[in-house]
Length: 157
Image 1: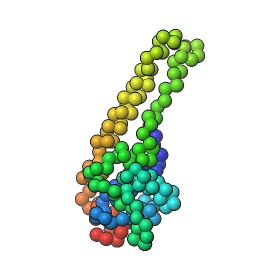
Image 2 (image 1 turned 90 degrees about the vertical axis):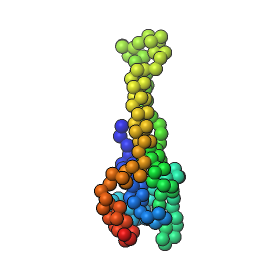
Image 3 (image 1 turned 135 degrees about the vertical axis):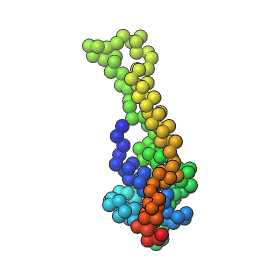
Image 4 (image 1 turned 180 degrees about the vertical axis):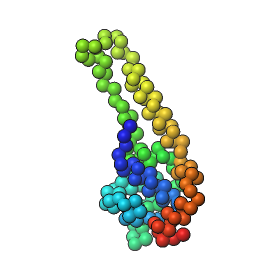
């Protein structure tokens, strides 16, 4: 499975925002500078997380983005789905019923075993991501990382 590059961006940005003190925001420009990303495109992508209820956005001179709820209540799956959707990436087109090797119609009434296995893998992947929260990610970061992130993003320690 290949996800859009913006998925990586938003996973990292959400993790960075989770390291800020409660209520503190970072702008799209600050996040773009932090990761050397194109700010206008990143701002558009961050809006997907706002629409999904993962981030909250404020406007004005001190505006920016922050987590919309506790890091323990935001899963990796929620972030990935905000960017990429929830659709299964594999689509069986029933080629087993085509060409010189076509199976008889009665052998194609049941779902293709390959489609079933791909669906199983997709469910397992989703369950794995649903089981990891931003709080879990923060717990695995080096102890110095949150202070460094706060300092670089907002100038606060």
